[in-house]
Image 1 (cartoon, one colour):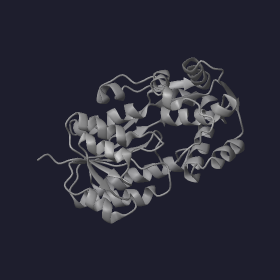
Image 2 (image 1 turned 180 degrees about the horizontal axis):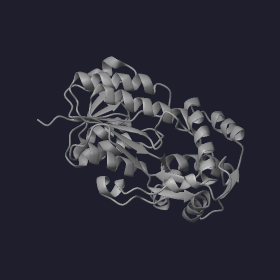
Image 3 (image 1 turned 90 degrees about the vertical axis):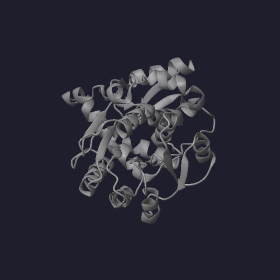
Length: 310
């Protein structure tokens, strides 16, 4: 019997849902999946109905992680943007090494180094090192900002003001973006494709969009007046913290906005170019931002009492 692939964050949350996409894509190919979820609910029930083995566990409980990694052929590791990445990485590295796993796809952020611009990106780099030291065949999938997260930010402003309220300078600021679905396609290609050198990194950008282009996409899809309002870093932090966003994510995004503002003011922006990894490994051309908005129109439609979830 073929060993399953362990997919973490399989139920999907509010930050991209790559684990859910990876699970569904693997199952569609007939690849057995062990779906690592936090709880049994309608999302896990759907995966079970598609043929996944459901494992209820906790990233930060090394015993449950060790049990989840037993008798698997590969692992997809995607930890949400919240506290605990170091402990979760150590637990998974221990579990994967103990059970002889030789392929682990590690989802991190586009910039991953000890001097990257946000604390989460620097933590991602250390996560990469731990998996490499463990000798579990890590492949680092370095994804830029998800379409889903930009849409979430837009949706939080549109019901009340019809505005995208972000501290991103003027409308010419460029955001390097990608759809979670495209990230998942690459992950599936890395999990099931030919063997690659351990520690290889795959930075991916699906599109580069100015604030003006993002505003235009929402205006066309929803046929309404949508505009951009530049606000201060402090005002943005206050708004999203008041909506219940976790402090770890807000700290990361605050630093990211500053970095993107600075990049748009310098030649550094030239490094934001669409990568061919999506097509070569994922097997499809990258989805455009407007395509994503149209596909998700019903889910993204402004609601009078919309509240951001973390």
